[in-house]
Image 1: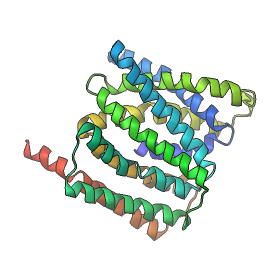
Image 2: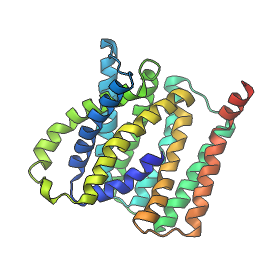
Image 3: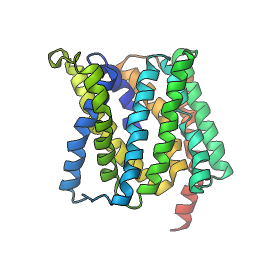
Image 4: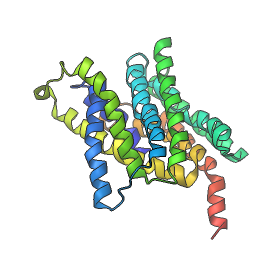
Length: 285
């Protein structure tokens, strides 16, 4: 989630020279050789079974394809505050989907922690701008991204016990890149000028490819396998917190006392949301 939080700032630097679809396509193109190369070097290459290939297509369709389309175009219509709050609802919807489809359960303490953490997110983003801005279409696009993220989490849960996180991420990036390729060729390749890409945009896209579309997903799929879909997704509340901290250093955004208080509330909520799993692990030793 720390790496993911930084991607929001990196996207701003990348967007100085590149359009949204180009950014997504290039970051996926970077992540593919990195992931397959890492799998080969570490001896973790795996072959996908024919019966699972449809699940991988659905996985890539949910994220990166639908998620990035909703997020990229939604951000162009709503404020960063509104976007952060909407994305932070992912952990609220995942437990519902996980309960209905995966029969996962959360304790009362976990649920309280989730709500407290979300309250902290609202405090952080409200401290950033003090108000919510956005139009209805932009809000719908952001919620489309949320729906895609929930679907992604449920599908990953079906795959993590058969495949390692590197292979899952490598194939979702490959299939996702193929989905984005027609959009890139039709809408943005004509306006792409490599000579006009700034050094900041270059390093930002490189970061997005290796960390945002590579390492982040490897760690996240492992987290889902170890904690379950509901508890792993509560950590998504850290994303706007990390973004706020990194923006303070790189984008010179303010860090008022209200924002600091919100960060502490988020961390408190995360601790409560994971309390049962900590007790189980300690009790099993």
